[in-house]
Length: 112
Image 1: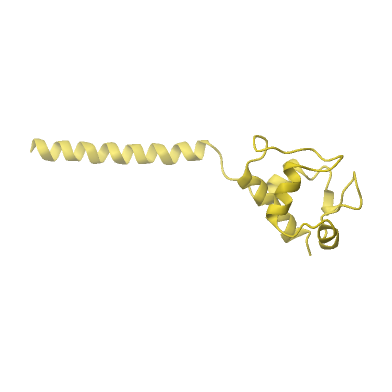
Image 2: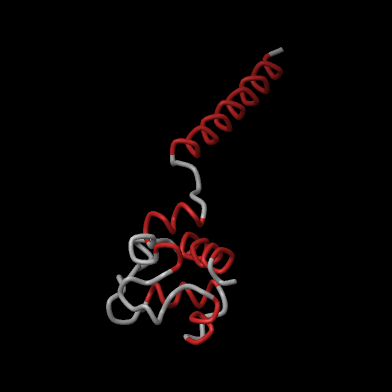
């Protein structure tokens, strides 16, 4: 009987711990989409895929190709070490995961 109660107590504690862990994840916030991240960090200069600082460096397919940008990783590289006029986004500002989501969104939305 004691052994059963101990096992039941351990099982209950595990269930509570699992529930708290899942709750903690929801408190941390939901993962933002590439679109939401783009709107938060990029939209002000790249509205509708344009470029208010340098009109020759838009986010459309031709300009991306002219600037040797073909993948989401290429976009992340530009975010980390941009040219003149663009804000630098280090890993503290935008994580690698979020930066890659922005890159995927740009290619899907404007890289046509």
